[in-house]
Image (cartoon, rainbow, N blue to C red; front, side, top):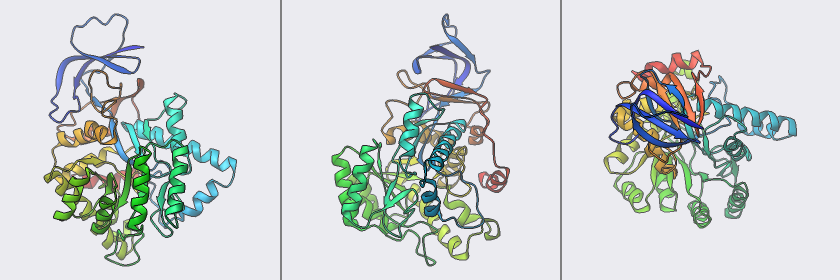
Length: 427
C-alpha cells in the first residue's frame, strides 16, 4: 500500500516545529518514506487530499487505564469488588475484554496513536496490544504494564493492581507480568486523593522502600522500566532513591528531589487532568467531600508545581491524563495539552511537541513514532485549524492514521455533561 497526503500543512512534531506548506507526505506499508515537494509524481499512490488541513504526528498518552471510561459517579465505586465479579467467569471476562478494546479504539478516535497503560485488569492490556498489532481490532500502539503492584490498603489494590504483602509476593507478580510479556512495570507507591483518611494527607507513603528497591532491581535486570504512582514529596523521594524510572503525577520538589531526578535519569509524567475536578469543581458538582476537595487541591497544585520545577531544571517531562478517572474520558487527551499550556505556562508548540516526539522518546519508541520523519510509522492526525494557534483545534479531527490504518472523520460519541463541566477550564 502506497499513500500520499497532499494539500496539507505539516507540523513535524519536533521541538521547533513550524507549519510547512506545499509538501507531500509519502507512505508505504504504514511507514513514512518521504516528505516531498508539491508536484511529485504520485503514480501508484492512493492520494488523500487534506484540503488545507494541518497534519501532525498522532498524540501519545503516557498514562492510561483502559479499564475505565471516565464516567462521573455520584457514589464511590468498590473497584476491587467489580474486578472480582468481572474475572469470576468466562462470559464476564469476555464482555469486559471487549469493553477494554472499545476504550482503546476511543483513544485512537480521539487522536491518540500510542498509549502507555499503567494498571489494568488481568492480562487484558497485553492481549489488546497484540490484537491491535495483528490488525484484529482498531486501536493505538500499546505499551502495556497490565496489573500494577500495590500493597494491602494501597492505591488501586485489588482492581488494576495486585496487593503484595511482602517482597516475595511483589517479585512473584513481576514474574507473572513477565510471562504476559509486558512492556513496563507499574508500582503504586503512595495513596491518591481519595485514599487519604484525613485532610492534608494525600499521597501517603504506602509501599516500603525496600519493596520498591527489590522490584526495581529485578525489573531492571529483566529489561523493564518502572513507572510509579507517587503524589507526595516523600513518595517521590522514596521512588527515585530506589530506582524508579518515571514519576507518575508528581509533587512539589525541593533541591534534593531535583538532584535525585538528575542523578537517576528519571522523568516526570505530568497528569493535570485527574486532580482538576476534585480541586476546582464545586463540591455540589463533583460530589467530593470537603476533605477530598482539600486534598485534591494539594495534589493538583503539587502536580503543576512539579512540572514547572522539572521544566526549569532540565528534567524530562512527559504528558498523560490518567484516563479512567472521573471526568477523564478515553477520547479527551487533547485537554491535557490545554492544561499543560494554561497551568504550566508552556507554549502551544511545546505542548504539542511534548505530546508527540517527546513522549515517544520518553516511552522508548522515539525511533518508531512521534514525528513526521522518514522511517517513522504512518501515525498522524489532521485538523482543520492550526493547533499552534489554539490547542482546542485537536478536539475536532478530519483524519487519524495509526500504523497505516486510516480513519476519516473520526467522531467518538462525546459526553455533553463532561464537556459542559470541563470546557470552562480551557480558557
